[in-house]
Amino acid sequence: MSKSDEIKRNSNKIWLAGLGAYALMEEEGKEEFERLVEKGQVFEKENNSRGQQLVADSKLDELKNRANQTMDRIERAFDLRVSSALGRLGISRKSDLDLLHDKIDRLAAAMEQIAEELDKAGH
Image (cartoon, rainbow, N blue to C red; front, side):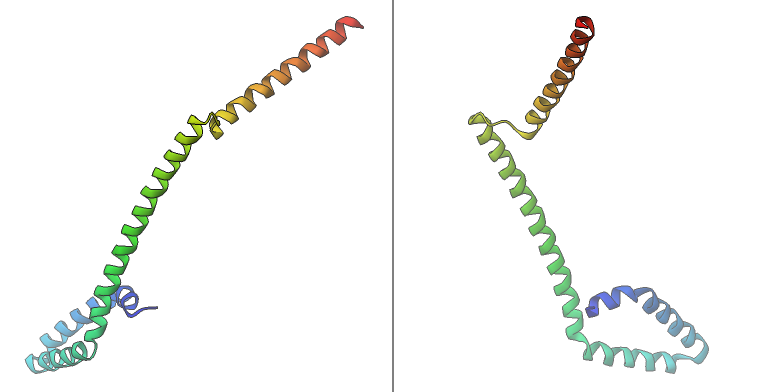
């Protein structure tokens, strides 16, 4: 798990810790608050590259989304062109073939019924 995922997952705890620090400042006074600020500054300095990683992760996610959208548009355009080319060549689409299969099935059923009626009339 990346550090940015961990921070996102723990963001509520971070917020609550900040509120706790504020409450502690109310109880302990300004000196305690300043000590917490200094610790936060040290932590921020030590982990500055992690903050840059958050920005990089965000930009990477954005680029992935844009790439996926572009691929979707390319696939749709390709499908339309292939379908159009097949139509010009006289090759039916799947939906056309499905309709044809349905008609054949209905014709076969009707012929079976007629054959049964002829058999009954002939006997």
